[in-house]
Image (tube, rainbow, N blue to C red; front, side, top):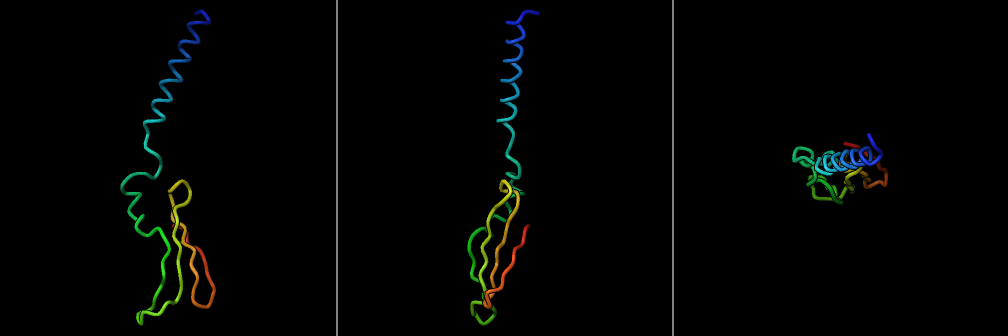
Length: 83
């Protein structure tokens, strides 16, 4: 097999592989993975008396495959939650 034939086969293989890679759906892009997207944003947390008792910021992380919550309570203490 000549060098030109090897180069042609390599070009075909790379083109085929690229087409497959581009046509695949991004990880975590399915409808099922997007069910908690409504939660993304900044939130004021209130008690039953409608008083603000904290805040929460939700963002997509890890290539949009996880949700990170950063929360703070009224005393200024806080934490994180990864879902």
